Length: 232
Image (tube, rainbow, N blue to C red; front, top):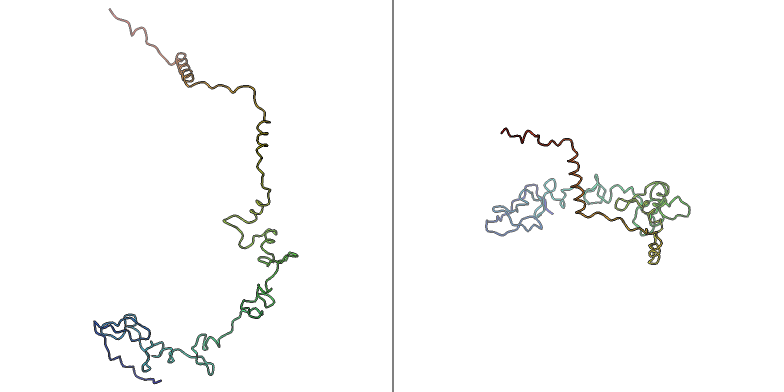
C-alpha cells in the first residue's frame, strides 16, 4: 500500500456531455456530471489519498479502510473504534444476565433462569402455578383481590364484569306446550270491549258542542232594532 502525502491527482479522463462513463467511486453506477469524474450525488465528496483507492474520505483525507477511522487501543486488535477507544469486542460487557440453561439466550429474571426455565415468580396463592403479573399474584387472582390485572378489558369491557355475566344461569325458553298452557290459564273477560264512536259521530258531537257554546255565550251581540228602522 502506497500512501501519498500530496493530494492525489484528478483522474485524467473527463467525461464529455454525451459520454456514458460511470462515477469514479466504488460501487457507484450513476453517470458522471459533464466535465467531472464524479456523479451528482458524489460531486462534493473527496477521495482517499491512497493511490488507486476509490473510496470516499472519512477523516484525515483517508477512507475507513486505510485508517480514516481510529482503531481499537487493545494491542494486536486492528478493528475500528466503536465504544470509546475500543472496538465492540473489547467494549464494556452488557449488564444483563443471561439464563444459565445450556443453549438459552433469554434474559435471566430469578435464580439465574429465564421465565421459560423457572426464573419467573409464581403466584402467591397456594397451589397456583401461574406466573405472577402484578402485586405477587397472577392475573386471575389479582382480580379476586380487588385489583385490575394488566391487559384486562376487551373492547372497553372489564373481564370481571364479563365473568359475572357468564356466571349467571342461562334462561331456558318455555316449550310450546308451556306457552299454550300459559295462554289458556290466563283469565279472560266475558264482557265485550267498549265500542268506539265512528268518525262522523265524533264530528257531529263537536259541531253541536260548538253551536251550543256560541248560543249561550254572552259575548255575541245581535243587531239592534234601530238598524231596520226606516224613517218613512
